[in-house]
Length: 190
Image (cartoon, rainbow, N blue to C red; front, side):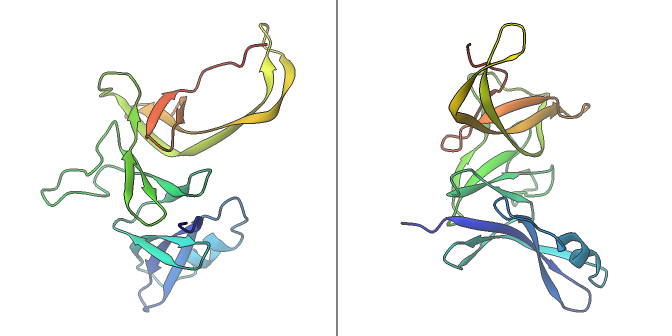
């Protein structure tokens, strides 16, 4: 069995040679003091790599310097790429818009590229910001009030989607096995 991801870090190199692991995702644990430690490093700073720290203590370096977010089952990470942040040898983005996100396994291998389900190419859609998790604890009543409790609650993991011109407005649920994004606007019947 492969070790699961315990936390993700972005490795920084300071002007005085010091290296610092900036904690991106600690699997829900506090990262208190993390940002202050980064600000205290001697400038200029350079991002060196994104790394996965597995529960067995091993460190996996990824070939880019983007934030990596742990998927709910901790078997991998979701990475959302900014334009120009991870390119092919010819200069093109490895994961271009609108499908500019990918899921990597805990061993660092690519699991899948994130894509919109059952839709033609969405040239204006752009995956931005960070992943989003929401928990649905009650069924939805027709008038918008909470209905009966749901046990166990439904936990959805996804991303916020916007356009290049507008901030993120829509929540899309992410299937972390296939990379498929589906519209997150669904209600649980009452």
